[in-house]
Length: 276
Image (cartoon, rainbow, N blue to C red; front, side, top):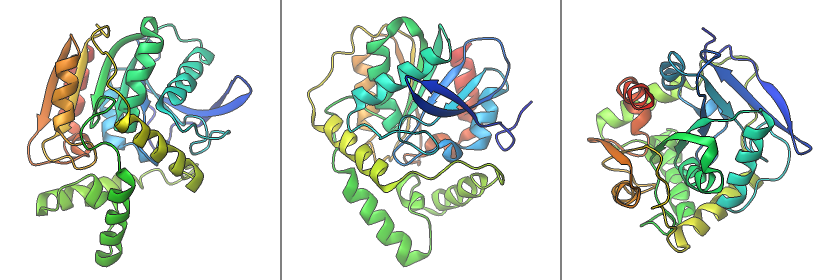
């Protein structure tokens, strides 16, 4: 099987814009489209998580408009990001997908399925929340605080944004960041400052907007988080599950925003079972 480190970076024209993407896993079956977090590019997915799911299902990683190696300017609203993701899926000629949305990607997944419900079979929403959810806006301040702590301790900001400040949490952060370096060649471009600014604006807009009616989303949904998420407070996971008519919830104890990376093996098993 193609590994995370060796997957070829491909390009597809999406209404005149070149989108970059990678595929792993079997060639048949419904593919899982991964939608990323703030600042995230293809190389920021956990290799063990991706490979664990790709062992059973086709996986598609991509950079949305203006992100990483994809051309264009990143939109400042979740709805525009979802429209670009829909256009990307259609450019690939796909008729049915599963959606995997993490953090900001979870917002995009919600907008995606409401825009094109017929394209979607099942949905995984990790570390995310509904429009107008508690504590979602103001992420810029959290990032500044994490960068300050990183500078004082010599650590990476994700140590503080994704993981708890316990010994176990910080060790999990070390292991996660080491895995992100496994792809040594043909790495993706990092997120640009203007892209990060646009994404923060989109997150703030999502967090301060009115609630969206999710009762029409009848697709099976797996809602996942850690019990100590500071980026998208965990209460939002329960709120999502309450609003979605066909949702199940998995909460990992003593973990933060990056619970799906800290417990990648167990979580991958949950996803494979859910998609089955």
